[in-house]
Each structure stands twice: as C-alpha cells, then as structure tokens.
Image 1 (cartoon, rainbow, N blue to C red):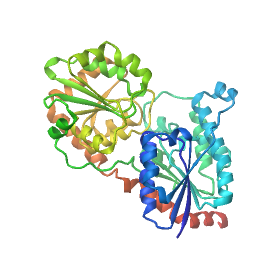
Image 2: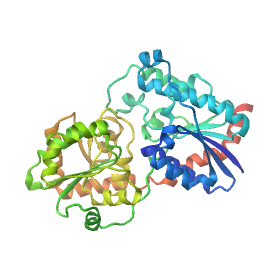
Image 3: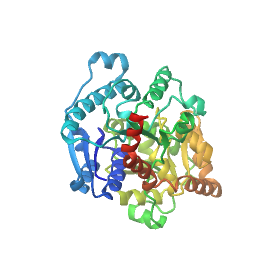
Image 4: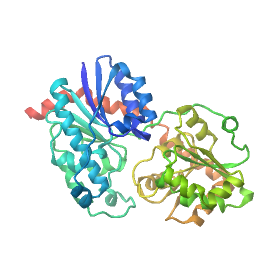
Length: 410
C-alpha cells in the first residue's frame, strides 16, 4: 500500500541523522512509500545531513521551516530548553497545516520527540486525524520509580501527566522509547521499546586499525567519541589520564568535531598540554565518517561514556558494546543504570578525578575482567541493529489506517 510520510527533524547532528538514515533505508524497501522531511536551515547545512539527502534524493522531499524564535517571556520563564521546544512546535504546527493540505499525509513521525516536548504534544493539536508516532530519547519522569539516579525535577509530575494524556490521543499509533524502563513503567500497548540502533561492526584487527590511524601499538587507549562539547566531561577525564601511572602507558583519543569554546579553554589547559607533550593525546577534530568510526572503536581499549547533565540514551555506549569494549560511566541516568545492570564497565560516582584515574588503572591492570565486561556489553548490545529499530516503526506505519479507524468507530 502506498504511503505518503511526513517527518519533522530540526537537528542534523549526531544520532539525529543516523536515525533518519536507518528509517529512510527501511522506507526505501517499499517502492510506493515517499517521505517529506521538514527540517531547519541549520540542520540542512550539516555535513551528515548533506550526505543523507544525497543518498535518498529520489525518495525524499526536503522542506525547510522558517526560523522561529520564542517570545522572550517564555525564554525567561521556562528557560532556553523549553523555549526551543516551544519554537520547534510552533514551526512544526504551521508547516504541517500547510503541507498536509496539499500532500495529504498518511502518517507523521517525530524521530526525536524531545524536539517539541511531551507537554506540547499532549496539550496542543498538531496532526489532527493523521496517524502519528514519535521516538522518545530522554524522558525522565519515570526515573524515581525505575530506580534510575538523577536529580529530581519539579517538572516531572507535569510531564508524567502530559505523557499519560498524550497516550489517549486516538491518532497516536505508538511512542517508541529507547529506554526500556519507560515501557515497563507505562505498561501500555502504545509504549514500545526499540533498541538504540547501531550497525554491527565488521571484524577488524586492532593493531592494523591503530597503524592506519597512526596510534601507538603498545598504549592503552581511552576513546572519547562524538560531538566534543562540555557534556563529554573532558575537564574530568584529561587530568585523570594525566595523573595515571606512566607505567600503565595510557593514551587518549578525542574523535569528533570540537566545540571551539571548549577547544580554546580546556584543550589548551595544562593536562591536555602535558598529554600532548608526552605523545599521549590524539585528536581527530573533524566529522567522523563510518569507516573511520570503525577503526577508532576497534583500536580502543576503553570507551568513555561519562556525561554531564545528560541522563538519557547513549549511542556511544551501544557502539562500545558492539565492539566488546568496556566503558567508564557515571553512576547516574540511563547509562549508569544499564552499565550497572549489565556489568559492562565501571561506574564513577560524582566528578572525582582520582576515582576516574583509579577506574582506568583497574581496567588496565585487570585485563581479564575488562574483557569480560566487554563480552557482557556485546551480549547486551549485539542485537541493537538498524532492523530491530526500524522494523516496529514500519510495522506501525503499515497498520496505522486500521488502528486509527478502529479508534474512530470503537
């Protein structure tokens, strides 16, 4: 059956473009499915987004939403995060109303629900009778009941109420959550857990990967991967590695585009300078293509998944598991809970440089334990394939007409 699908994705970096590629690849298997992608000028200008559009030109129409700024009062009262959700939701609602009148969409999909916010979707109409779904990344209102450590927020009770209200929408087909604890908490047929997806890696030789990357063959390498900004907590990791016993021969790889403010400050400070002088800091300050990503993970011994003020899913954690690499993480948030449950790495409590140094030393000096952690990570994440993510979403799109019709007549 032919499907005219609408997608709204205002961001073009990191996992956003990766998830779009997975979905569009699955959509392309249906010859009669076509997608209209509403995005922003900023997203369209990102290199990964440009690659995506070029790959799916025949199956994809890209529409750029006009830039929207929330009223200053909303930014003052709600903060920049919720003000951005407000602006995104307004842009989505205006564009969808105009586009749907001309294109008659069969389905609408939000690959990143947090771009517009649970409260907006629950309290304000946007899709009307068009069947829709969303992928949830970082919901936190269920953390206390699920036993996931995170600072309490006054907004959690409101978001919980809004989430339950949203589930009552007849046109909502499903909320696909990367967090398995959301589905357990909700116990609702519309809340479906899907794995945070990553393509299974090829079989690679670590020594050869290091040679290709010009990395030392005999060092113990800690990998920091992704968008290199303040959330990566390099202010914790750099001095921790600088303080490691020289006999452990620990080096650090930072792979990904570096935030310029962080680069000017932290990456020019004493710990980074020391590590460069000792040839123990290696930087890949550019967009990382998939072939280079494979080399980096295969070459690493330990993967850093400790994040500041970020409590949701982590694609880096999934990749580390698929490459059977132990991780170092905070004991908070979803990452901390999964690492604790699966015992696929070591947890550090609080921003403690000495504790990070000790954890690195433990992984380096106890290689048998580290390898076992890697094996447990592989067992947990080897099934997080693109098909396992996109399959349930495509199945929901295929059955949407029947489900929504049932709600209308039931």
